[in-house]
Image (cartoon, rainbow, N blue to C red; front, side, top):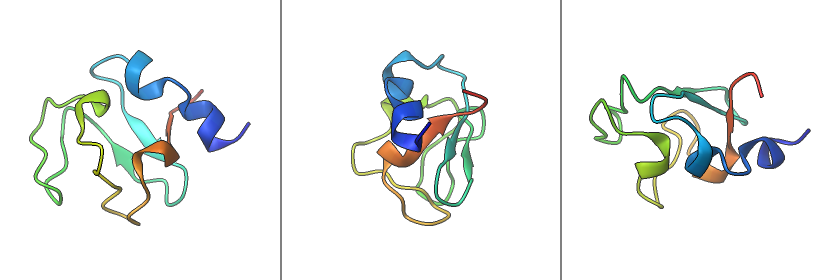
Length: 70
């Protein structure tokens, strides 16, 4: 299964507290921690990240993220 297929709906269907993993560098976005590199405070779910947000580990776009264990 590709990362894109695993992401299908992850941003919209993922629980607000669900962590998602970059399919390129395996960096994990955890809503409980936010993203201090990109100025995202804790508590922001993946689906609420700005459209232009990208992975702080490798600059991959949001669509390269996938649900963990999916």
